[in-house]
Length: 157
Image (cartoon, rainbow, N blue to C red; front, side):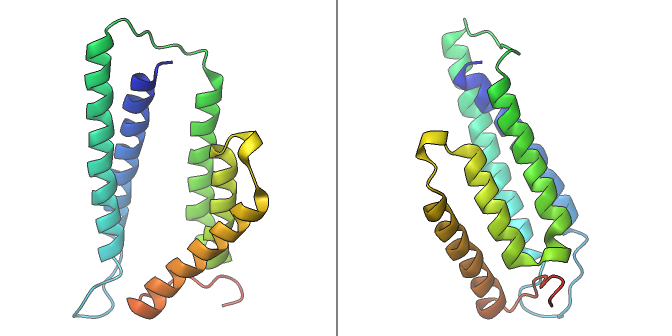
């Protein structure tokens, strides 16, 4: 499978994901009648992801038109496995967020997602764990302490 076909497919999957995310964020209830609500950031992320997805699709289509000889190969199982693993990890993240809490779920998701995306020879699990911990705690601090948003705390809550 050529890179331009991969761009078209991945951009399409991300676009569907961003639309789903935006629709899901419409169901978040507003707690305070003023200021930024809990639905604001998911909507912003969904819109940003949609714009990026459209740009990826456009780039893939433009490259495909320039090459014209590219054939889509279904035998490329490695790419399909990465996409499937990513979708399963996103499902894990969504469904375990309430039970495990934001920090732990984000940490586990990041470790596993980096493990899926990084080439086997370049995986340094210590660095992956440190990066995942810093990002998880930094995101929690930003959302909870700076933006005063309530995040799931999990079973220890």
